[in-house]
Length: 391
Image 1 (cartoon, rainbow, N blue to C red):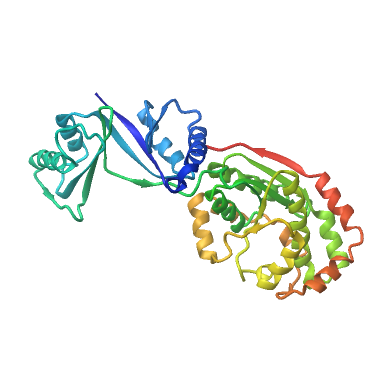
Image 2: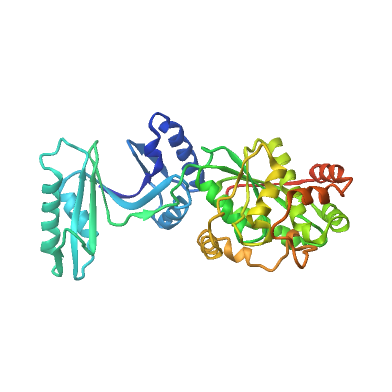
């Protein structure tokens, strides 16, 4: 009797020692959440997980979903068979296409009760395949085809060829919760992805300047957040009305400092929202030197507005090509390139300051005498959008 299974392997959790069970429980919960809607059985054994008893026509869909689970290192679509030497021979032959090729058989034998060791079993299976595939030659070093046999306890073995990499990283939820400053560009969705990959649960905040930024621009951000749910699980998105604050900045502050002051106010609002919603850090998509607001001096002036809460900038050392390549890989690129403007492009000065002074920034910001009431009003009128995990 044989059946198809999907073998799952985790990565960094191996290093967690006595805390391993905590991380493993989170990973299993996340796997099961991604399997919702698919009739299957999830089986856990020592250091291995299997997905069994599923409709084989859904194999590609299950594989796609599992590749998005942070904490999983790799997977293999395998054939489960009772541990019987002839059965292993026959299943291994099924994984050997009838064409000219070099090959090897690799055996891992966890069941020590067998009368043959790994090398002997591999040699026997290899001989069986070699006799039945005319164009085959053995190559133990760099074979074109490698057939792997994993002999487990309790009388079952697993035969497979390919090992497909998954998202890796750490299980979402093991590293606390962070608030992502999410715009419609390429950078911030990638930043959210990278922090979720390190186990951080993601909330998001977006600044919307209606009517100067359209409803399509807002929907674009919602769509980007929905893509992130495929990897990060459920996301709560806070949409902040920012028009009045931008008008105040435009009317009261020096033009070259407008972007600097806007970023200071944005990150101040984000800090307040984060603290109210149990987020222990802010996340931005800033990359050093990419634009005027991302120079060392600009980041220093921005950081001054958010003391007491760490700001994670996972893209800080990445160039635009690396960021856009990741955006393509995770599925946010096509959305980010849509031509809908966000509030960062409204009232954009011709020559924003590149090396702002903290003293001048504070002086210019202080010219907005009703800033606290504007900030409080914006926070009170936040629209909260609950986005559920998209499988």
